[in-house]
Image (tube, rainbow, N blue to C red; front, side, top):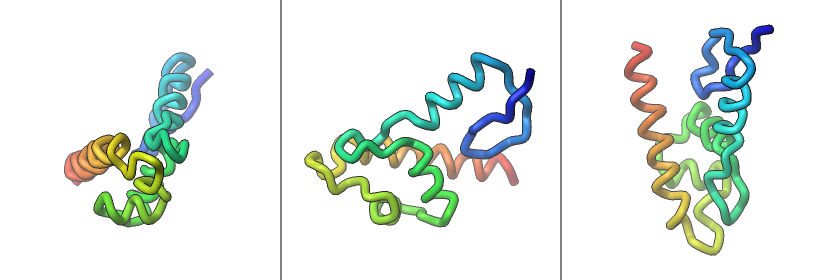
Length: 91
């Protein structure tokens, strides 16, 4: 049995059993601990045009918890960098 992956690029490559579980866990990993915001929300904001940490924070509500973005900020920056690198590879 084949499933479609849940990657941020939404590729149409079939994946099997354990890969689906790994991808689901990756997408639903909590990036902002204070607000409980998963990775997929950040990726959605980036896809919709948020291009800086500040724009992403405004779109999803991160950076406004007890740590004021000290824990999630670097993770969000890494996601943004990963997204930009994947966009360059597509062209």
